[in-house]
Image (cartoon, rainbow, N blue to C red):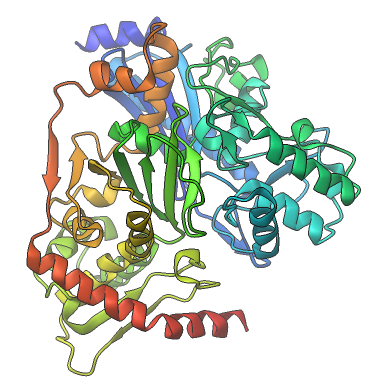
Length: 532
């Protein structure tokens, strides 16, 4: 088996997915059976500078190189070979945000990530202009706000893109995005799988009124259907990805996608009636529909799946970062007593401990808002935990409140979806937090009031989904839809682990959520005090 895999690597019969997540850049290599055969990673963190959540794009490049080198080390150790080519490569990243470039490809202002909630004026204006919800995170909102703010560089923009689009452009020279990623920049028409022509015309009028020397179509990337032509690795791109010089140019690329889309793919949730939930630095849920919602609520976002199907998203700006912080504190405390404990070793025991707590968290309530949270109307970050005077003051209840807080904004948004008649037949979750059985999966089921399933590959996450999109580009037949490819060639025969919260867990979470909602004014006041 090892020799066969080594030959497949040498012959380029593999697919590589690279994802720029919020805390890690990760590469996953799969063979033609869609089995993960090697991985690499690089840890990075966002910075909060001058009121902006950002990443240094120079670190994006150096981190990509370190991640790829780590992948090559893994390949060398396992198969005693060095890759010179791949069957197909795909790049994914955190969706939305703002990367404006001049005619020389120089970044004009620091990268503004999805985490920034600083475009309320533009978001409201565009929502009214287009007649559909334009969230503050979307790229078009960032561009419009920069123009409204009269930021000095806006007339010099020659291209603007997302993080995945930026890396794809560096490696291939192609300025394009997959359907899901593109639909997080600007509304995409599900009929044409391109930016909505009428809305684009309206936005061009706005650009003209403000004296911009370009139209939207001249600076935005073009939308590329799933499996479509998205360029190949250039000689310059090969040097960027592999400074060691082993990688040759010429490997084809699939369209770059967003981390929302790769989460859908890695869970097999791309057909109507399915939903996927991803938890990392943020927590978001996507539900595929058979037809678009006419006018969804402001807290609900309308996008497209990687395959071009209409979907709605509930996006919580905050996820597991506050949990990570507390676990770091507990590891530090144990270290004071001389115990050699790493934070990574504490997740499973603390998660299991949380599930021994009271279903309503024993009177504890937590808000994990390291950043602002539009689903609950909180403008900026200010994490907070409180308890009632008669709370059952235990570690289990404290931890259960921290875990429950991850899904509270999603639960608020999901209620709005139910009013719109969205009732998914199945919901699948993925991400590292779901590795510990019987914890986050049960709490998510309690929060949404629906069964939640996890695949065997749930821990692989978005990079695996991106590798599958690369494999689809390489292997699919003419009549293969993405949906049929995943169902018949990737996940066929794979079992699902499904959790259904019992009545005490559902009732307890409802009680926790009631306290969470009732004290939102206190959380907003805390956020306002930080802003001031």
